[in-house]
Picture 1 (cartoon, rainbow, N blue to C red):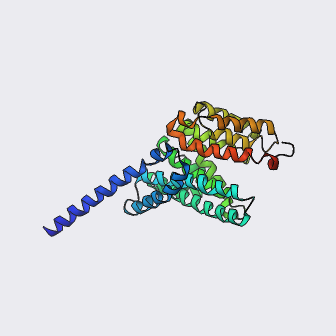
Picture 2: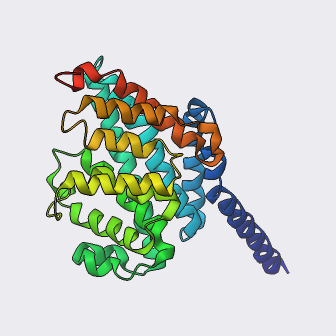
Picture 3: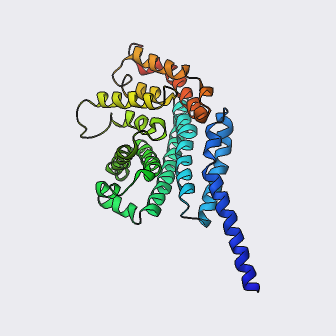
Length: 294
């Protein structure tokens, strides 16, 4: 009877853990609708650590792995890397320390994404190391969130690792992941894949044609898929092309378009728009430094 009681207790606990994991896996929707980025900045670390704690009990919970990969990626970009960029002009050492922290957070996110892909496809990570193209070929449309968050986090870490040749050497893996995601479901999450590819195309090795033209096509598709209600495509394209080509008027026009979007018009993307608009304002305030003839 005691053994049966213990088994029942363990079963109840496991059920409770699974239910909490299910709830946390969906908590990003609540965060995404919030109108106070500073509140989310303060709350996110506790939520992320709780996710990690639950993953110790349910290590193969796909929803929780995806949410944790996405959560760390978004937190690192919105609240660590962006703040490092803003701090650089006044405190270079602090900015460098924050970028190092952002890199570590991105790699943490990448590892959760890879774990999720391994759960869905046994041995995926090892296969990716051996032959990226062949590894991603087994992915299906249901894998797109894992493919995206893994590629986004990994690419962001690489962008902050100019002194890490081993990490830079992982670029073919990130490219295989994001290209497979786009091939499977290019419209996923209202054009998020295209928004990522806006900047990626400008750095892609061996791409066909003019990288700025490829970037422009992704920008236009991202705007179409988002109904023009997302600020991120405008900010990404402004930094990717007009900034690099020293076109201040176009740069300003795109960022003003990003700022003009009403975050409340689409509550499910309110936080993402507020974060992107913050970057737009910061970039507009630096035009004298970014352009020879602003």
